[in-house]
Length: 351
Ligand code: COA
Image (cartoon, rainbow, N blue to C red):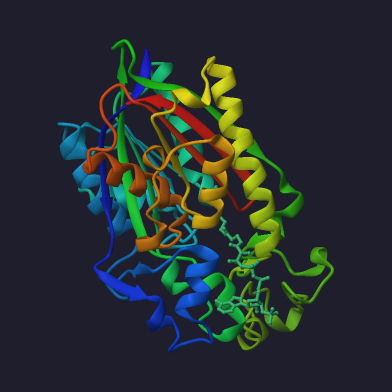
């Protein structure tokens, strides 16, 4: 028994934010952003009415319909995001409610693996399906970055990269020859955890980091709050990224983990029909394409339109490629991701 993608859907908010618009908020330029990242525009969610959960629900409804089931048929939800609606509870139960699922014979799991979230989620779902425990798993990646970015000059390196959106798949068992997930490969290395991270708000007090860059001792006068006025005043509630370290590590780990998956499956890079990399940066994907020796028609790049949507980027790119007829039944599809943690991984599947 293998795991197949029975239905797929995506949702992108309607508001298009061009590079030119960003130049109104910070010192940047269309040329710089395109040259360094390949991004031309991204989408931003409607600030008051759209959340990762509502966007995930929009994508999920399409995936559910395409799988030929109803939301009530789902027996498990896996939600990957780094920008959840609430600190807790996670988005899994919120999505259950948003989809109108009232039965309680269902589980909801939230995973926090950032850009690798979809690959990690697929690996988890694959184990549940292969063991026979579940038959209809909804896996979503959704992000609303636009509310957590630093729009001052200080944040420009990070802010220009990210966009909002959601992608979803319904996973089911299949015994059809030449269909389904072949393998998933997962890796992590916490050595550089703070180099691509949003440190605050958090339950640390700043002491262990040994630097004032990420936090201040949470003194008694702060009343034990994990958000202090000083953090707000000093603009510390924003993501942090050491861009060049991320870039240099990503261009090594992407090809490594793709080759590892291929080797384990006894396949060659020439066997890949479509590589769907996490849309981190067009330059990273182009580098990976070159190392893997793949022609343009065998790789999906849509970061130009949507920016980096973290956990949502792979299902959005996969969905778009399938909707455009670029992925057909039986094709060998390779998913690969690298991101905060650092975590990285790959998945090989026959469509
Ligand atoms: N607009 C204009 N200038 C900018 C800018 C922006 N948005 N962001 C940074 N700069 C400036 C810097 O201040 C620096 O100026 P200086 O030379 O006067 O000091 C210059 O551009 C070069 O900055 P640097 O950080 O060295 O650029 P870079 O070539 O490393 O590119 C990234 C920056 C972020 C595009 C690149 O490091 C990258 O893509 N890293 C990986 C990011 C990623 O994929 N993250 C997601 C992982 S899942």
